[in-house]
Amino acid sequence: MVANIESWFIPFDVFMIICISLVVILAIIFLIIIIIDRACHTVPMMLIANLCLAEFIFGSDLLSMVIFTLRNDLYQIDHDDIFCNFRGYLSYVGYALQNYCFLLQSIYRYLTVVYPTDLFYQSTKFQCFLICLTWLFSFIYAIPFISMNQIKFNLDNQICQMPLGFSFFGIYTALCIYGIPISLIMMVYFKLVQYVKEMNKRAMATNILMRAERELKMLRRTVIIVLIIIIIGLPYGIFSFMAFFTNPPKYYIRIAFIFVDASLLIVMIALFNFTEPLKTSIMRRLNIRNNTVVIAIT
Image 1 (tube, rainbow, N blue to C red):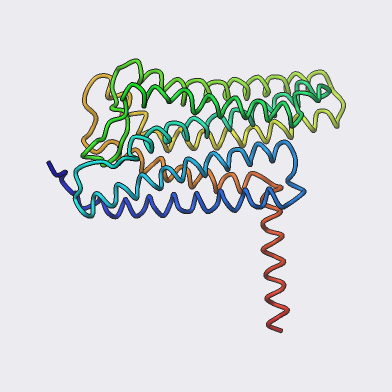
Image 2 (image 1 turned 90 degrees about the vertical axis):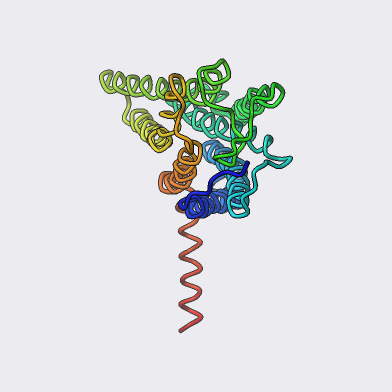
């Protein structure tokens, strides 16, 4: 059976390819800048690099998925390929990685304020240990999706994903991808806000208070990015909730992934604006290049 081709399929496929291609390009640029610029060789920037690597993997997988969808839409192909299930698996891995990267940034900000003298928690080794744990978890938690054949090819949406509905795997996925990391991020944020308020009441030293407020500001920026992901990804959450009681719309995955792909691009733009060392390094290189061009012309 050949799936019906709607008039909006191809334009939105192209739109998603553009968005995700920009995400992959930006992730590569950010990683290169962090590697080559010594000013970026800090623990906070290591966590940013970890996020960029996760976005690169997630974006590359999404790009492969939408190219597959576009090809099937153009040629009206009604079957998957040998990599379809793996792409579906990697999409769940990538989404989890992204959110746990934000959680690690939140934990680091909290530790630097609450335990400023305990340098072990702020050390590169400890943060690398946490990074390895989150990567292992993100790859392992999704293995049952493949081993228990939960990922299916959806002909109408031309994609391999788990069907939505009230099931153990549906709840399990929601907890691992959203429930655990997002709730912990918000908990860390509110605990840090409360801690900084208590520091104000105690009339702490100015330099300590300023550092705490600076870390709180950085954590607030992380929370803003997470809220962007939640708000723009809301259609997928609505469809998931709807599937507990009734069948979601026919093209629910296409609609949801349009928002997911757009949210990734917005996240990368916000990451650039909120990460001062990265922004400064890139702008400095652009200014040097512009100055060189001006001198050469004159």
